[in-house]
Amino acid sequence: MVDWSTWWYRVKPLGEGTYGFVFLVLQENFNTPIVVKTIELENSNSVIKENKILSHFSSCLEIVKCYSHEITIDEGRQWCNLFLKYAPAGDLIDLIEIARGRMLESDVQVFTRMILKGLSCIHAKGIVHCDIKLENILVFPTKTGYQLEIADFKLAKEPSEALLETKKYRLRGTLTYMPSESVVLGKIGIAMDIYSLWDVLC
Image 1 (tube, rainbow, N blue to C red):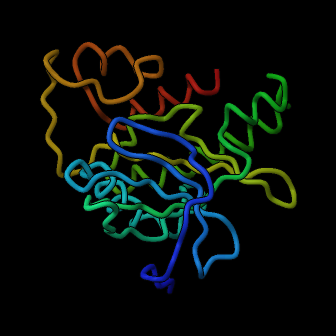
Image 2: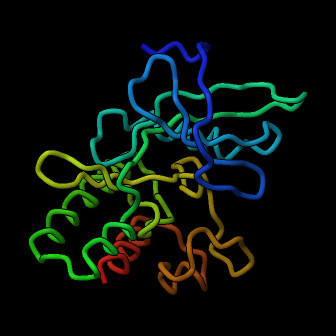
């Protein structure tokens, strides 16, 4: 069990959003870099939600590992930090670029099976990811190839959420990967993730 009260420090920034940042960090009890999503506490609902959802999937190899979360104070401001497994090979876009857009059919089959295993774990808990896309499929090198893991659950629909099927709603997902019934009617269900995966593969 990692004691997250021990020191950790930022190595370099990886990204920036409206309210927060993503950093590559080193932590005293880890031999390899990890990722921290950090966001101001008053705007941290998405990070808290993501931590809650990922806690269900610690044993699923096809979903990114979340180590812990903590609250810190920096320059008088409170920050919520989410510690995640670092993907040194980037995401599926990076992998496609390495292959110059010409992946072997056998590799595509293996990668599709991995993503489907991850979605099976997610859907078994009554959760809909809502944002399956190339950028949210992380890539981890292995001795025999690559392991793909699903990440970024900030838009996910939990079983307890009740969504109205109406045009007057906030789009949940990335428009390019969404089925028409989700865009027009606001329908959010397992079929949405499968449709998005089909778009990823195409």
